[in-house]
Length: 159
Image (cartoon, rainbow, N blue to C red; front, side, top):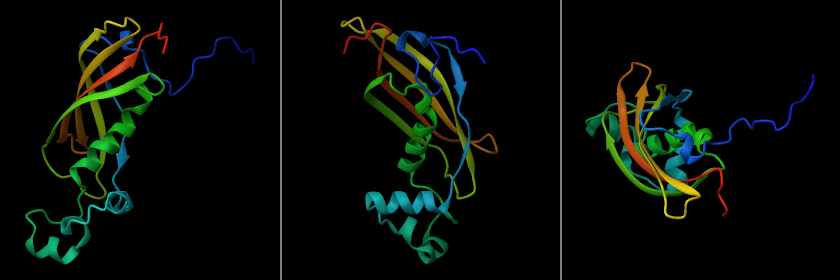
């Protein structure tokens, strides 16, 4: 095997000017586990009875069964998007988030991403990228929609 330099790095994100309005991509999927929920609840001390009390959920909750807190869905979705911005993202600037329906233990989800805006900053070596992200379960139902705005390096980033 002959190695041709420079090698492209798998998992390294795109520069802001490699995103174009209208671009779409889809992440790989992930199945929600009970351990995901419990690790999140314990790490954040989100000891809400909806996530810690099975009897309460069965007897008093509108939703039955084991489902994820909304912030966990968002955070797990971000980990699926990470390869597209790894080493190039500089700052998280804004977020709009809407929950549509629960994500239950055993559900598998992915994120469908559409680039909605890109613009160069005054610094000239970075840009702002906005996307519209749909978290979609295995039944093609939208679970959550969120719109992040990120500051991302350009190829000529000086730091």
